[in-house]
Image 1 (cartoon, one colour):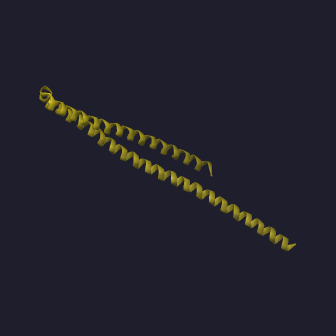
Image 2 (cartoon, helix red, strand yellow):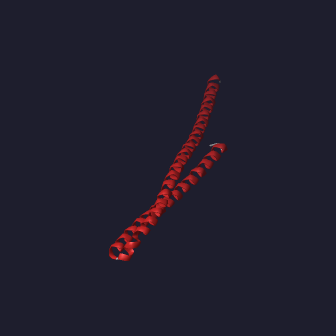
Image 3 (cartoon, one colour):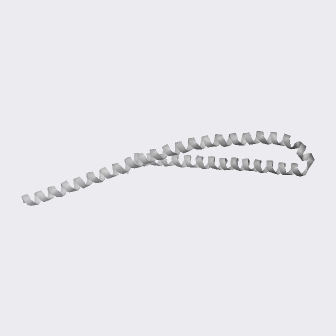
Length: 136
């Protein structure tokens, strides 16, 4: 394999690894956002249960639920943003993989072409030796 092909493959591998790390980071942030949303839902259910038991809490439930809706909207917006970011990262990773495979294919083709050329030279050399032996 030629030095230029090795360099291109190494650079492409680095890009793929970087994009994989980015995608993993996005997935971690998305899981945290989903967990936050689940916690918000559980807290709201807890407050509703508390309002059923305690009359004073029932009076404040409407104000709590208004704030809860705002926090939930923010959390859902973050999830939407993360989903779009994840889609972009996946597309970039797919492109980087395709590029890496192209470089690897070119390198392999170049290697095989060299082997074929070497085999042809060896065959030509053996043919020449055979012709010289017959001539003698």
